[in-house]
Image (cartoon, rainbow, N blue to C red; front, side, top):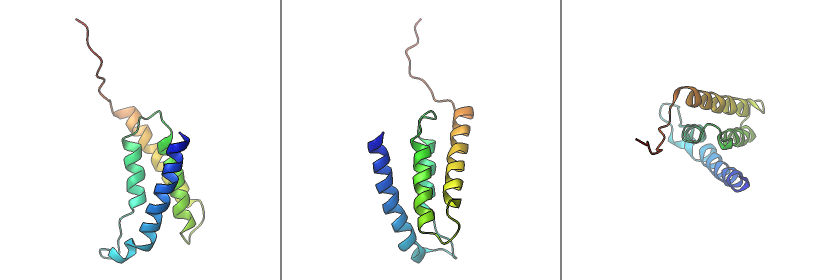
Length: 105
């Protein structure tokens, strides 16, 4: 798990640098895509709901966005972690993953 968290730290660091320094030049009517949020949503959607990597990814992504933002520190962390918890709740409660167990007759 430590290797996954270290990979997430490096990946979100690079993605946050890309988003904050390069993406503002490619806006459409003043709006840019939040690539970090998209990655956090994908990680939480495609992860097993009982795993905690999605929550760690939300915390790490929020931390890096808070470091490079001019707002209050902790707002992005709170928003990303709450989004991850909400996604995990919805996936756990309403999405049924098919099992591929052999049915015996």
